[in-house]
Every structure is written in structure tokens, then in C-alpha cells.
Image (cartoon, rainbow over all chains, first blue to last red; front, side):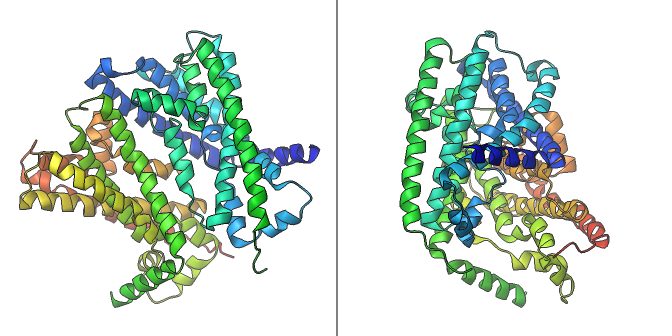
Length: 265
Length: 258
């Protein structure tokens, strides 16, 4: 276990090195969030009654999403794991006396944490200072913040487990472009538009699915759309999906490593 | 030109060697752009119009910009991976060959899997064309054609600028994403919905609205000046500053390759 934590630390420190990249990233994400809010405000102007939430709640959702983008997106950051599978360097990993699943899991977790550690505060700080319609506000009910923190943590754990399923699929397809999973997940988890905008039946199905257990839950707890027992229920679901995905990942990993052929040197 | 076709054929043959990988890539691109279109569909399940544009009109706009973008991604891919070309020394080899630099960068890297977006955009267009209420006369067809081709040119200009920055920084600049990927992503709605300031910026600084919003008005019969129809041609002018910038970067380039 200690080995994994030092791995976590090394990766995290490594990630903190790229401060200029983080600065560029922050400004990009900032512009991105701004454009998103402008697009939604056009829809709001068209018909405020059809808007499923208050406009300020949407603004909270978008800024929070941009601030924590690094930890909540269902794709990997700066990892070259798929690359090692395709080019055969995976053989080196296999001879190490470490469980490959755990190793990948902690690596992916560390990359995420480092990424978010540098980006979240500057983005939030500016978002709180913006003029009125774009300004980020604290939730009306501060008690929700605790639930938000729990749910955000679980989201990071769920997403990391999901990404590993993506890596494992590379063993079978040998293609670097398995973006299908991550993009689909991003959309279904509310990465493009909050699930609140989805048609009711679809939304309910997605909320029960593993995708609902990703960014959807913490962001909507923060903006007050999901509260009280609903939030507790959602968190329970997150725990359930986390266990399912880790077990599934370990199982598939065992199967795929049995048939892995390392070619060349 | 003959040489370009040869490059084209080699690129194509190379990528067709790995058929499964090619189709997975293609499919992943379809899914990728499907998310863009699906988000429009979800919004319009709830709203009837935005800034006066209906669903099929927005889809018309979205498919044109997706097509432009995917054309650029296939044929100007070399500029997208430019940091890599500098890093592994491939670019230095281009410098010693008796052909134009930009020519070689474009010709050596084409990625046909990225046509996935195009495939999907055609499907969207097939839905949008009959439903958008446009009477398809020759001038409307020409307008759409100009929107798509000149749009690809503007995106190519952005890619060249992105690559030129690499001469100074050696690393890719994430900030350009807001204009390239952002242009595609936010270009699914007519740029006017983002307000006057953004529209002005996208007209006079980075001419994305020139190939999207203004000709769209002509297409939908909201404006009928010939100016609106031929507007996309101005987008081609964008290549001039991008080219100049590229030359400036090239002049101060010192090899960093391995």
C-alpha cells in the first residue's frame, strides 16, 4: 500500500511542474465556460419558463464544472498508458511486482488531483468576482457543501475506475482511439449540458446509470437541485457503481492479461 | 500537384493497412461529433427557438461547421501535431527538401479517420436540408458550398497560427483550442446568440462568423444581399496573416529535434 501512495505523491508533484501549461489551461477553460454561459443565456432569453432551473444555478454548474474539470472528466490526463499498450512497453509494467490495476488507478488519480489542484482555485476566485449574471454564488443552503464534498470525492473515484475500463479495452482493440467511451460518458454524465435539460424519462434512466454517478451528482448538489434524501440516495448509488466498476475492471484485467502477447523489443 | 496525389495515395494506403483501427477511429469521431449534435437536439426538445433560429436551421449551421472542421482535420492534420514534428526532428528533415514547408507539412500527414465527423455531418445535413424551409436554388447551393470550403480554410489558418506559436514555445498552446475546437463546438449555434461583442470579434479578428452567421442569413432568406452570399470568400484572406506569422516563426526557428 505504501508503494501506491508514494506513486501517488510522485505523480502529483510531477503534475505540479507544468505551471505555465496550467495557466494556459485556466484561461482556456475560463473562456470556454464563458461561452457556454452565453449560449445558455440565449436559450434563457428565448423562453425563461422552459429553463429547468434558475439561471444562477446554471452559472454555478458551469463554473464548478470548469473549476473541477481536471478531476471529473471521464478521460485520462497526460497519461501515456494506451501508448504503452500499443507499443509494447506494457511488458515492463508487467514484470514489476505491483498490481497493474492498482498502479494505473493511483496514477490516474494523481494526475487528476494535480491537474485540479492548480486549476480549481484561480477559476473559482475569478468566477466569484465577475459582474452579476455571470457571477458564481455560494449555494443557498450551506449544509449541502458537506454532501457536495463527499459526492465530488466519490465522483473522482468512479471516473478513475471508468477510465481504466477504457484502457483495458485497448488490449482488445489495439487502437489508440477509443475515445468513444469517454466522449459518450462525458455527454451522458452532463458534461455538455446538465442532465436537468434532458427529457424526463431519459434523465431518470441516466441518473440511475453509472453516468449519473459522475459529475452530474456533485454539481447538482452544489447548485441545490438535488438535496436531502435524494442526495443521500445518489451518494449510495455512487458507492454501488464504484464497487461494481472496480470489480469489473479487475476481472477484465485478469482476462486480458492472460491473452496479452508482447511483441518485439 | 502530382506529388500531392502520390502523398495522398500513400497516406490512404498506410491507414487502410489497419482496417479495424481505422474504423474504430472513424466511429469514435462519429460519436464525438454526435455529442455535439445531440446536445442541440436535447436543448430543442425543451426550447422551440433560439434567437429566432429553429432546430433545423441550427442543424444546418452545425453540419456546415462540422464539415469545415473535419476537412481541416484531415488535410491540415500536420499542423495539429506540429509540436510533435518539431520534437522528434521530422520538421528538420522537411527543411532540407526542395519543396515548400507548408506543402510538406500538409502532405505528409493526413488522417482519414477524422472524416468520421464529415460522415455524421452529412447525415445531419440530410435531415436539415428538407426541413429548414430553404428553397434550394443554385445560389443557395453555392452559398452552402462556400460556407463549408471557406470554413475549412479559416480553420486551416487557425491551425497554422497554432503551429507557428510552437516555434516560440515548442509546446502546443492549449489556448488555441478555444478557437479551433471551440469554433467547431460553439459554431453549432449561429454566432449571433453569443452577443454583439463576440460576433464582432469573430467577424473582424478571427473570421469564423464570416463563414457561418452571415452566409447563413442569406441561406435562410433573412438577408438577400449578394454580399452576404459571397461573404465566406473574405475568410480566405485570413490565410495571409497566418502565413506571415508562420514565416516569422520559421525565421527564428532553431532546431530542437533529437
